[in-house]
Length: 288
Image (cartoon, one colour):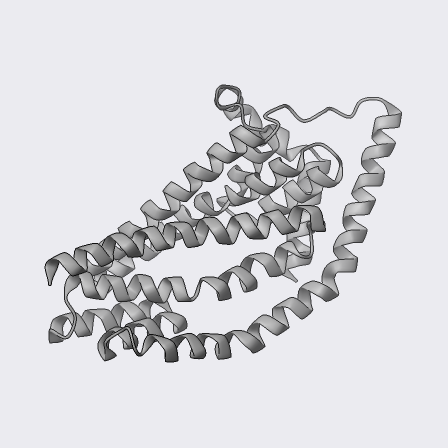
């Protein structure tokens, strides 16, 4: 249902030019950054719903209003505005639950997300069109836009079974994949650290509570507890990407956009996760 709701909401926003009204207050900033206005509008909307923002870009791409690069890198930029809203709720909870450890963990996550956003924004500026969306004024262009709308909706409906199958396979297969990864981590992580990593697959609050308990018991140091939290977070990346992102994108983006979008999305996530884990690993090794 979220696929249908997001796609329809995005289509309505594009059709009734809600994106234009949202874009006007930041028009000067967009011109200075040379970022496609459709992408900026989608980022603004993504504070409330990144899925609606992605559907807006998919609809604009189906109309021929934005390039493939605008659709790919614009969609990648949607994660940070949405995460800021969620972080404002989860960070105080993490601090209350785990004290300084929770503050450190939340800080790493928000800085990592911000750094990834800046990289994706740079790629959008460098590889995207940076131009304004064409206005549809004459009847011939209006008919073309209407045909593109029809193609987008038909594509979304045709891809719904594939998207649902994708969700089903992900939910069925990922627990086994995660269990296999945890079995292999037993050789690398202490029992206390493994408990934190395992808890992270269930929920972040469970992993924070486990890390706080291990820290107070003295079985994990502060950098060791932070390292275990980040490893658990990284281990759940594939599940989150397949379940929350790709499973939705399959229903709204064509293959020529979906393939590079999936590669860039996963690649940039893993890059910054590896960098953050590497830095904390150096801290952990230095403090021993």
